Image (cartoon, rainbow, N blue to C red; front, side):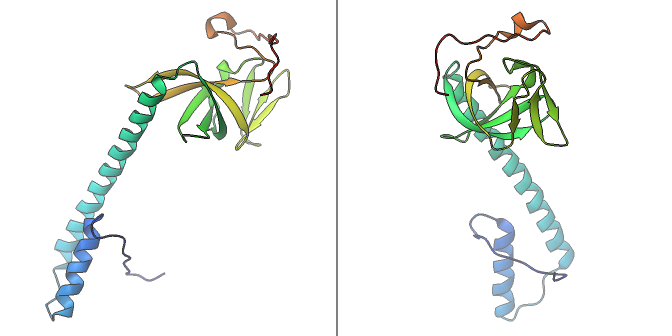
Length: 182
């Protein structure tokens, strides 16, 4: 709640912290106050560069995650729903914390819609519901390195996947002939 304050992380990590360390050393040695305008410009520049660096770090991590999963297309993994939108379900994999999305149109066995009020995905015919934190199983459907995007397909017990080309806007429910514990 102070009008002016500072906090320290590691001076090796952030240049603004190094600037504060240098100012404190200067003042402890009896030096004069530094020019406020110059310092504010330096801090603003450092903050802008830090944002660019953080964005580059996120993009490179996402790229490596997609690159890793590209070799696993068709494989199944356990995860939890980490986000919901009107167009899809985001799933974070339990073991690797890699996140991808399953489009609502690709969820097998029903037509699913996003209920924004209840923050859940609901099947029109089955009433099946998915919400934040639900445990799910996914199959890696696609990995686009250029877009840094992962496409997942929800694997539902007793419901066989239907290729998107076969759906043509109608609902297909196919019961799986094999028994699955998941």
